[in-house]
Amino acid sequence: MTALQIDRNPTYAPLAYFAGRNKHWLAIILALTIASSLLESLSIVAFFPVFVSLLGDSENESGGVFAIVNDLTELIPISSPIVAASVLLLGIFALKTVLTLTREFVTAHVGAMVMYNTRQQVMERYSDAHYQFILDNPQGGLLYNIFDAPSSVSTMIVIGTQFGTALFKVLAIVGVLIWIFPLAALALVVFGILYYIGIHLLSRKVSFPIGVKKAESSGKQISIANEFLTGFRQIVTLNATGWWTSQFDVQNRAYSFLQRKELIWNAIPKPVMEFFAVGLMLVFALIIWVSGPATVAERLPTLGVFAVALAQLFPPLTSIGASRMRIMANLPNLALAHQAITGPIPARRDGTHRLEKFERAIEFENVSFGYPGREPLFNNVSLSFKKGEVTAIVGTSGSGKTTIINLMLGLFQPTEGRITIDGIPLQDLKQETWLSKIGFVSQETFTYHSTISENILIGRTDRTDESIVKAAKIANAHGFISELDDGYQTVVGERGMKFSGGQQQRLAIARALLDTPEFMLLDEATSSLDTISERVVQESIDMISQGRTVVIIAHRLSTISHADKIIVLDNGQVVETGAHDELLRRNGHYARLAGARR
Image (tube, rainbow, N blue to C red):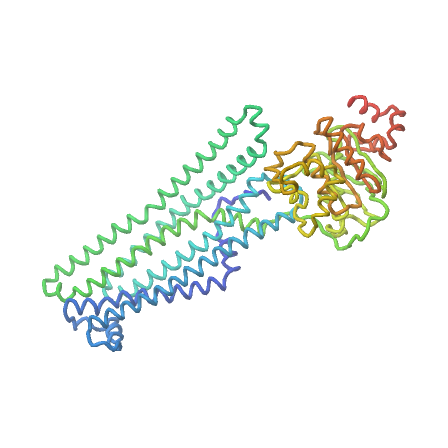
């Protein structure tokens, strides 16, 4: 599954999924909508006694629905008919206002809650995802699924509520018009059906494809911007900013064009409705006028109610069209959010056995591994990393050194063979109990825009300040931290750019040491450093290696001369094993590597 895999055919399954998860809240919204719609129709009819009081009695039209309103007016203990009618009208509108505001409040609450829950679920699913899934997907697509797609779920709740509200309003008002003026109501029904058919076709042929292209374009924009900011230093020094901004411009221009196109199409329903409203009102007035002057005078209250009904009717009719088109435009994002929550995202395996203490050794037993779609990286490799030993792994680029570390961390699973910890298969261990024993330092340091203290903690908020300082001292980082004005509260900057590579690496070592791990994994921790920084970091590594089990992937062979055992990889196979001096005397692969890297 890819992060932005969008179905080109519209489906309502995601909409049904999210509606089903919030059915109780939606039922409350529906009840409020029906109640307010009934009051909407009653409020229109309630204008009739007001018009009658102002224009004179129309006894011949006091039957049917008007008789109900007249009876309600007479229940009000006020002698003046116009005042009683006005009080009734205001009371109905007041109750309708309360119900409408309550519905809007509930809708806003549900929309915000759905957005929060969806974002959180997507984030949690990605946090459990297999490492290969993260590698296979562009970060922009994953970020889009975490932020933009869940926002569309919230938007869809609001739009759906607006659509339902408008629909019930229309039905309630048309019901009143059927009693008042059946022919006009019939004309409205015919027009409404034709209008909805047109909007339905327009939304499927225009709005949905626009939504798909907007989602794709937005995801690409996020990817480009994310990559640009991540590699800003290298891009600037290579004078390549123009190319990156031009790539962003292509997607930005495409998205802007789609946005403009969507807004233009969404604007169509309103003027069409206004034109029809004026035309229908004129036709109704013309019919009354043709009937004769007496008929006009008698029908003025009815005409007034009809005018109020039309004024109340066409905004929700317009809203139905606009909401329908917005629903179709948001369906692609809804499908992405649904896919991110329910789709086949491969999860990391987690066993049930708790490892209380690392006692003996880590064993690779006939392990084979290959990345999907590529040749196997190594076959039937058997290795042993004994407790208390410092083991170094060397080899040419692409020989599988880092992959062995990733297999130890459980980020990848062997395609064949098994890895055991004290005889227990790694996949059977509860991950947290194994990872808590490991201190991991990679060549690519990870720092984020926060304080030094928080970068060492990296989420382990229950640790004390004393433990932070202790780890920094062992990592040879306390000295330069103490010289800073704000000490451990100094903000490191985005990706640690305020500090040198050596300083960032020492912070990474302090982070790895915070929980006093039994087992250290060092993946080319000094390869990108200058000679002085390497010496300082190497002193830290030598210090932390004492009394621990350590596995080092080395670029510079001089840094591993004191290792208890050195494993040499070549073409996916272990070709040599031994101590530094022993391997040099053999004058084999290791000796050639040593000569090439002097």
